[in-house]
Length: 142
Image 1 (cartoon, rainbow, N blue to C red):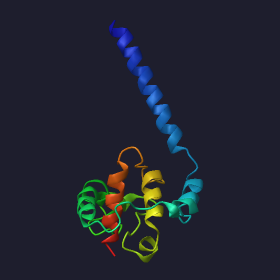
Image 2: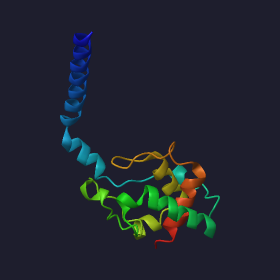
Image 3: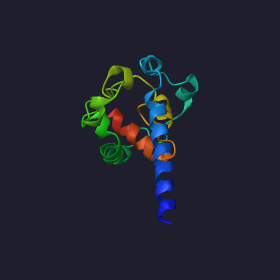
């Protein structure tokens, strides 16, 4: 019985090691090339309408969500200087920049939902209404 547990543990450790090594050996240049391309939402995203546009209460709620979900990478003022973002490539976007602020709400909504490494997709972890609230808060960072 004890031998069986040891064999299972060794097998599991071997599989875990193999999985980790497979990620380490991924071609780094391809990853960087993809990540350094400008992140553009599809044209269809521009047609997505923010149902909470101009809602001050939604922006206030969005600020709370931002602090819980986004601040760690994008920083307290949205400048892309959060503690967790320091080691990321590419660096987190400066949400106060003209580049971000000139995008449609729909484009920002699409990016939050879809994500792009190293930013996660939040389509399933943040409900739609909450994503709009975050966008309303991002609009206050101008």
